[in-house]
Length: 330
Image (tube, rainbow, N blue to C red; front, top):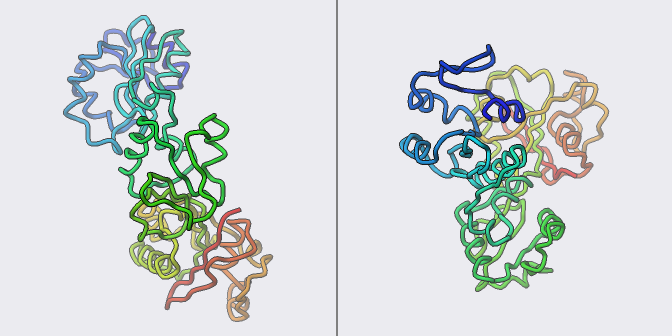
């Protein structure tokens, strides 16, 4: 059973050493030791064992809902695939269903919203790259759904509503046509790439749809880049959680500070050649820059290229060694 499941999911297989048969299998003599070393190395685990054994072994190793991997427990005949840890946050419920389908078994899922056939907003948010603020606020939405309350939702760019409608859950939500129509005494979801720190009566979902074009000198530390980006976003009322991509010129591809910044903010960095940047016509071209490096823009052109948008939310903003522009991805 273990080999069948491992093949189906392209997984690394760990077995007691005496049962190891191939080079692609990892043998172990002490289950607790290998588990302690590997639990947080992988994002998903499928244990073929008694549930009690798994519970006792992983309990001391768990860190928290947002940090723990998905854990599914499967019996030796493949009859029951139990979602044990990380049902929504780590995708264990989905994994349990996939395992059960592979073994012709039954997924065992006890998450309240799943049992009730209600949408898991935390899962949808993750799939749609919507960052909740506050994260724990989604528990309130789940409890309100379970209580039968309709959830108001403000989603002007239609980033969440179409998915809810496609899943057949539109009747559970009440669309707010204008922000001024929001009812502060009712639970709700507010989808926005703006910095909505003043909105304390709703859960904000920030789509990762903002693109920052960055120009920088060599040798700039990651923390300086992070501080620069944060300040510009704050000054312009943009949610840092909505930043998804930072774009710049290929000549800066090996800058350590860029990778440090990307790791700190959890964003993707993309690069464009001088020729690509020179083909864009930004609002604030620089003849001096064109003479020096062959393109009249880095930050604005990079933001426009990476976003696919000819308009900028924030035009070129300068510091002594950095420039930044922001666009909304289309």
